[in-house]
Image 1 (cartoon, rainbow, N blue to C red):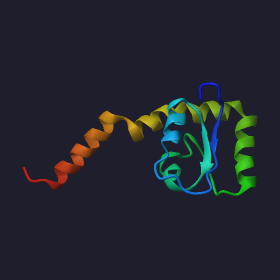
Image 2: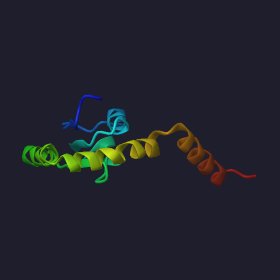
Image 3: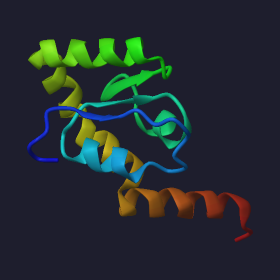
Length: 106
């Protein structure tokens, strides 16, 4: 992934979690993918583009990023923080502990 400028994975069916999207974001790549499954929960307009699955829409999103290095850099720069927000172990454990504390008795 370190040699890539864009990560594109136009799935035909939903991917349940989408760890590969988090890995791409962590590498600072803007992600272009279909708006379904795990991708819909991971990728947002700050770090990539979610498309409907229409080939023309996918091509348009890719062309925009290929033609605009500033857009690639901007979206890519937000990727690592988005990846940490979703998958950082410390953050997730703190969130889990908070959720458990809200439903348990002292």
